[in-house]
Length: 216
Image (tube, rainbow, N blue to C red):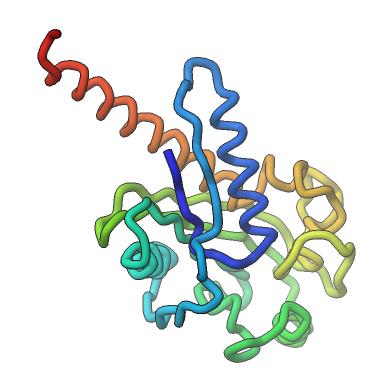
C-alpha cells in the first residue's frame, strides 16, 4: 500500500517511515507500506488551517492534498497544550509567535508566557488522517504528557521538544535519540493507532474481495 505524506518536514517524515516499518515487521502482517513525501509539495500552496481542532485541520489537509494524486495521502496536525495557559498554544502551536515563526521564536514566546506559572503540566497531541480522492479513509489521535521547563535543554528533535520534559525519561524529548522518543511520543502513538486501523480495514477489504470473487 502506497501512502504519500503531506509534509516537507524531514523529522515528521522520518517518524512516518519508522511507524510503518514497525508495522511491516509485525507478525501476521503481509502487506508492506510504501511511504514517500507528496511530490512537489513545496510548490503547492498550503490550505488555510481554519479548523478549531486537530481532527478538523488534519482532515482538511488530507482532503486538500489528495486532489493532487490518486494515491492515499496522510496528513497530520499536532500541537502542544499547556494547562496553565488554558490549552494554548494548541492548534496554533506552529504559528504561536506568528505566521512563519521559527521553532526558536515559538519557544521564546512560550517561555515568556510561562513566567511565574507554578503549574508546568502540558501534553503533546497528534492527529493523523488518511484521505484518498477527497474522502477520509482513517484517522487516529495520540498524546503524551510532560512538563514545561524554564529553559531549553537538548539539541535533538524539533518544535517544542527542548522545553518538553518527559518524567519517565528524566529529560526532554530533545535530549533523547529519535527512536527512543518515538516509542512514547504523541506522533508515535497516533501513527501506531493508525497502522492498526489500516491493517483492520485492509484485511477486511481483502477478505471481502476473497468472498466476492468467483471461483476459477
